[in-house]
Length: 164
Image (cartoon, rainbow, N blue to C red; front, side, top):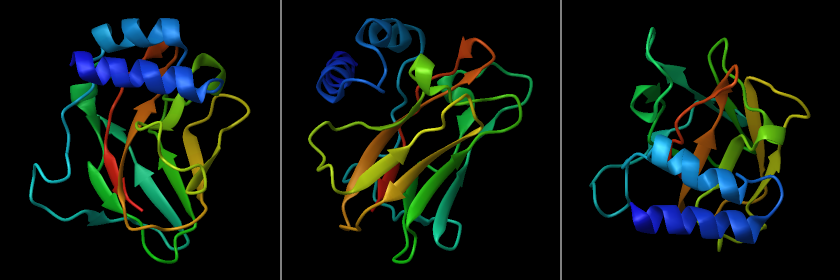
């Protein structure tokens, strides 16, 4: 857990503006621990083909009548982008929003990933979707972080994987 928090803090510092602010990272991690989802090599399974033609749509759901803690957030833990998919769209259920000015969004977990793979297209205001433009496929697996909210409540930080 300490290693994950240190990596997240390092990524936030290295990536700068638009990421989860450094002083908030520690409080988010202590309140909402990152899940232990798929780790390549640890679990022997193939990714699920991403839904959508031209655009990979990843639907996120929250267990009804429950808090939006990480264990209640549901989405495919490991998706594979197709050859013809040129963007990725994360879609939240009604009442939930990505608010980039508050540090919400979708972020690659590893700060050393080359800049020429994905380009975030963050909304200008709080929106139920967040989009990345896919610049080129490389066949590699990437862990990413999701951070969003319901009203003023910050939802748990989820860390699924994708195969580019």
